[in-house]
Amino acid sequence: MPAQLTLALPVRAALGRADFLVSPANRTALDLIDRPDLWPQGKLILAGPEGAGKSHLAEVFAHDRAAMIVEARDLFDIDPAPDALVVEDMEELPADRQEMMFHLHNRIAARGGLLLMTARRPVADWGLTLADLQSRMAAAAVVRLDPPDDALLAALIVKLFADRQLQVPATVVTYLVGRIERSFAAARAVVAAIDARSLALGRPVTRALAAEVLDRTAAP
Image (cartoon, rainbow, N blue to C red; front, top):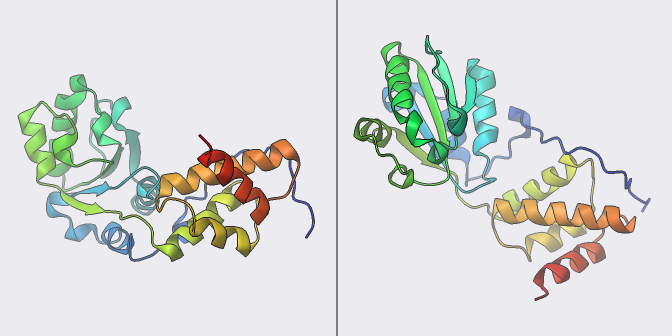
C-alpha cells in the first residue's frame, strides 16, 4: 500500500445533501427537513449530541430554502424577517437577546415563514427566562438525531477521514467501529487523533497506527 500524504491540509467538512449519511438514526430528521409543511406553526427543533449532523441538516435546509443561518449567541435584530431562518445552538442564546428572539419568532410566524433551530438539550434546559419565548419554543416540533448504529458509525468514520483528504483501509474502519464509544463526538475525536499521529510520525493510517492511538488514549 503506498504511503499516504503527510502534509497537514485544512479540514473541509462536506455538507451537501449528497454527503449526508442516512440511517435509521437520522432518517426521520431528514424526512422532516424535506417536509416543512408538517412543522406545527412552521417551526422545528433538531436535537441531538455534538456532531450528530444537526448543522449538516441545517445546511441542507438552508440551501433548499435559501434560508439565513445565524448562531444563537450572535443573534441580531433581523427586520424584515426572512422567509426561512436557521438558528444554531439555541441553548447558547444570551439572556439579553431572548426578547429579540421572541419578536423575531413572531415576525416569521406572521408572514408564514419557517424557523429551524438546533440544540443539544431539550427546551426546558436552555435556560430561557422570558416566559413568552419559552412557551413559543415549547410549542415547536422536536426531532432527535439518535446515536449511530454500526453502519452509520462506519460511514461517518470514512467521511471524517475523507474530510481530511485521507482514504483509509477498510480494516481501520472496522477496527474503530468495534472499539470506540458509539457517538459522533468520539468518532470525530479519534479520527483527529489518528490524523495527528500519522502526520507526526510520517506514517500512513493503518490498523496498527489506529491501535497505537487508542492505546495512548486509554493510557492513564
